Amino acid sequence: MSIRPKLRKTLGCYTYFFKLQWRLSKLSLFLIIASHLMNTVNSLVIVLFPGYILSSIEQNLHRQFILAVIAFAVWEFAIAILKAAMERSAKIQSEKVKSGINQMLVEKAASLRQEQLEHPEVFERLELARTCARQDAVRGFLNNLFSIVFLVVELAGLLYVLKDMPVIGVVLFVGGTAVYVIANRIIAKKSVEEEEEENQPNRIMRYFSYEIPKPAYAKEIRVFGFQPFVSRRHAETLEESIGVTRKYLHQLSNAQQYTKITEGVLSVFFYTYNILRFAAGKLTVGAFTVTMSAIFRFSRVVSSIVSKSVDCSAQSVRLAKVKDFLEMPNLYTGKKDVAPFDNNGTIEFVHVSYRYPGSETYALRDINFSFRFGEKLSVVGTNGAGKTTFIALMTGLYKPTEGRILYNGTDIEELDSGQYQKLFSVLLQDYQIYAFSVLDNILLTDHPSEQETAAAQNRIDQIGLRGAVDKLPKKADTYMTQRFDQGGVELSGGEGQKLAIARALYRNAPICILDEPTASLSPQNEYDIYRRFSELTKNKSVIFISHRLASCRLCSRIVVFDKGRIVEEGSHETLMGNKAMYAEMFTKQAELYV
Image 1 (tube, helix red, strand yellow):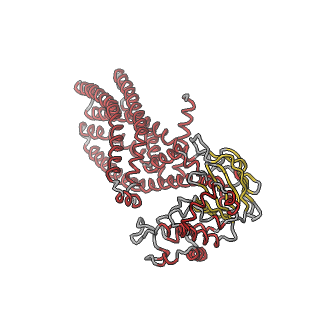
Image 2 (spheres, one colour; image 1 turned 90 degrees about the vertical axis):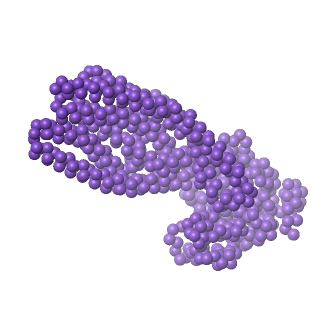
Image 3 (cartoon, helix red, strand yellow; image 1 turned 135 degrees about the vertical axis):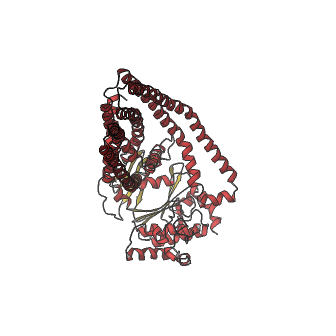
């Protein structure tokens, strides 16, 4: 990338996060600016005041001396109080900004198409964005940016104080600045490289730290005796992370040493130079003190400007990735309103194929199929046949790689995704039970009305979960797990599935889909769930998906998938008469239902 586009991108990043900070917390931005302004003024006061005090003593100006000391003490006292107050307020505003960015990330992730969020590169960006939010990187970035601005102002003041600096001193400062720039660029470059190389082991470490200790994992680890395996993998990952740190430590240490040596050389020269001038009577005690303080501070300021400039550059690279995630275009592009649901309508697949990102093989290939509203359809096939991908495409979670999906003749890619997905109530095979109350798991809404709560309670009754719920400590208000409530409980696998089905029924969408949610139930219980669900949705369009065939006798049409293609289609009687894949699967499973 040439200099001009790179500069434009950097300035664009600065502008973007300045506006973001302004939107999330104007006070936070004000506090950053006020803090640096106060620090700059205070630094110049610290440089100038001691010299003024010493000059007053040297000239026997006792009244001036006393007033100067009092003024200096009052100033420092006021600065201390202001800093304490601003720091308290800054912490509150910092949390506000972090929470705001986290909320933006959650909303953005929720708005993306499912296949986007499942893409490793997108997930990597999301993880990086979350890390930046946790570290309050936006505020840190702007803090460094304004720090540079005010350090430059302070540098101008110091240059005025040091206007009589000799030529050789100017040369040394320029040389020292060059060393600072080169060293800090090396430090920044190596730090970014180290961060990128540590990303994978750190993600694994976070997995061990936050995911593995969860109760669901802990049970299996104990039952199967996986402790040695977990401990070994944890130790290996830790060693890998330490190895990366060790790899870059030497290079970073060398670069840091260059800056320290440069500071030492500059200090020795200017201390010696000014001591000789003082000894020759060319400097008063006050002037000597001010000059030495200014030289010492000048060196620090130059170092800080260079360091923070390099930090800003590195931070802008990281934050640009956050910006890229927040501005990532959504694959949902449709704007058309969805026509009202009509039982005479259809959803039609026209030569639809789908291949997962990065995969060379198709999960679905050339699917031509029409789902007629009002019917009950069973989609069957072995694991990996493409059933779940088929539903993900139908509901708009994935976009076809090839072909089109039509809702009443209109390509669903042209329709408003939010409106279209309200047509479906889907219970996926990897459904979740949230760590909230039983009712919250069904309602999934804040401040439900009495009618909504009554409807949720009714679904608990209809799905056959009332007996289990009434035995809970707080009945339907009991929390699932003890994560947020010590009185929380865990439902059994079958009870959890019923709760998830109650949630699907509560949504009351015109098209209901069950994607193998009963895998952990016995065949008889599975059939009972399907039968009850079929009765409760008798006026709706229903799709049952399973590699087991409990639902097939309840449906007017069955579609059989194999290796990403539809290989059979028809009623139970028709498919049994064909004596092909479906008949073979049904015959093998029939004995389980006796």
